[in-house]
Image (cartoon, rainbow, N blue to C red; front, top):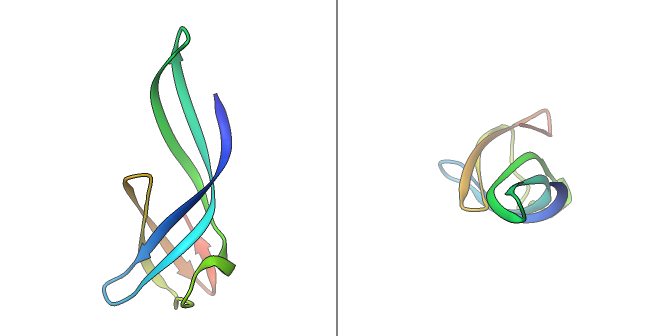
Length: 79
């Protein structure tokens, strides 16, 4: 089953850190009626939620117990 959910995460670079919120896809795999695996993908960061504002660069997004590398280029998030 695939669903779109909100998340709260942490963006981190060498000398910067900021909390953030956004949306991602949550995919749950089932065997019969029992969930056997969960995966998250298609992250989208809400720029309004990032405080303080972060400069362009490479960041690590910590969310759902995992780390994903993201970039900010010309003020936009690239995944």
